[in-house]
Image (cartoon, rainbow, N blue to C red; front, side):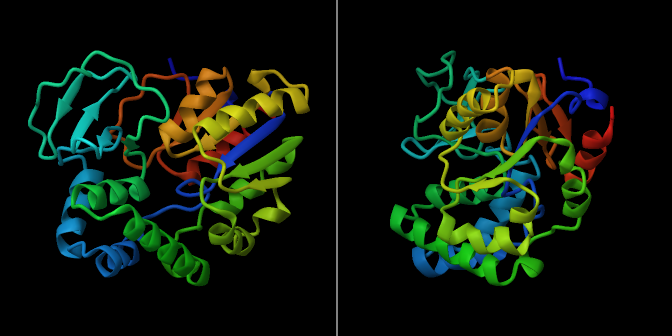
Length: 278
């Protein structure tokens, strides 16, 4: 059962925020990403954009909240982290021995939790190799660092940053390497408002480890830790499994909501939650 939004931040001493898709919003980076995948991996950008729009719009065989298995080119539907259905790319059900089994970390699956991962799945489905995918990702991150105002929406960030002083300790965590994300973090003013920014943390496992460290380092209970993120597998699942509080920023609204986290449609809804209960 979801937690009470009006008290989600009450008594919280440590706040951990995701970066990509949480502290900025929108998919303005997608055209640049697809252009780079065309250049480096030969991906047809029009075909890819059409499939991506369908995925994010919930009308494709692969939807937000699903997992894509590049090894078999199959889609795994596991709303409560147990596989209930396996389909092909176009949504046709197929027999698979994994039906009924649980989902764990580190299985080589791509969780479709945001536009970044949806693009990754489309590229993998169309045979873009690992090196081309890496080069494309690096290129789009470099472009973001020089044109953040053009490619990202940070219009809801300032009210959130204004509420952070209530927490004794606050940090940002991202899977993106430091050399590709540090300029963006600086341009967003995050080092001025957070005690630490951690890069290349390998979420979800990295978040699990960091929560354990935070509990010991700051002598807090899980109920005194709040995590805010948009990717359920990376940001929210490790949080609720640790017994901490969570705010899930989910602009798509298509994935099942069965956990105790508070679910919001965008960053603009986060600031009021941080204010409530003072």
